[in-house]
Length: 335
Image (cartoon, rainbow, N blue to C red; front, top):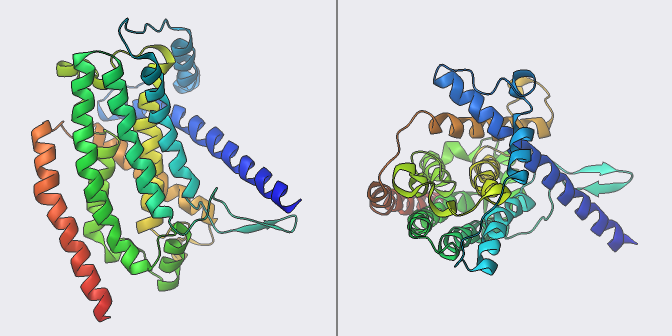
């Protein structure tokens, strides 16, 4: 009975995460258009529903009813698999994110995360690295030179910045003494200070890696329209085309922002000066604050060249990340 109850609770958590974040991801498309409109002195969506609020629904209907043409010489099995590998890793990242402290419901302790494991940070790296397979598979299976070039450019960026991401997070692990996401949050609560104040360099590097991983400006070279006609997903149509930006631009940004909150901003803890706000509210305030920052950058900065992105990553950011880890380890050992 205890096992069945545990399985049932886990399934409920999974369904809640799927429903909430897929829905929020769809409406982030509306929010980003509104934000871009204000930045560029225009109104954004306004005709479909009040304030354009039904625009995501209209987009979904359009994508579902649009003809989807598959290239004649495409590898169909890999072609479809690429769509799954694009969205599944982004959703799996949410499984190890604690959205708040545990609570009791009907005498049973409920942890607001799907899986509380002591190697959660390693799972985050593992899930994140799978994303590159979806990109490579989509470009290769499409049998299109434009799509394949776009996938290779994206893969080069992701592989380079995955290394930097790993080193940037090592400093946090050294300070917390654990790779558990819950343990990292608890370590910050016990210290009474967020790790971003101990690891400002690591956070800046993480932020750059987050932009690179999700293909956001200034790292969106895989979708340079003038060169690659939207890049690796150019041969996809209908809802299969819509899955790629939903997974990369929105689900990926939300997941990596939530991870940043856990690693650097104390998770669900908040400053006492703002009063007794719900810890869950604190978590989402910080998470969507980072999401807003990423969207804001997207419509503010220009796009870099592929060569500049890889050179900055390997020659500047990676040495900085390694130096930060070494200094953190030395200081932690001395203290």
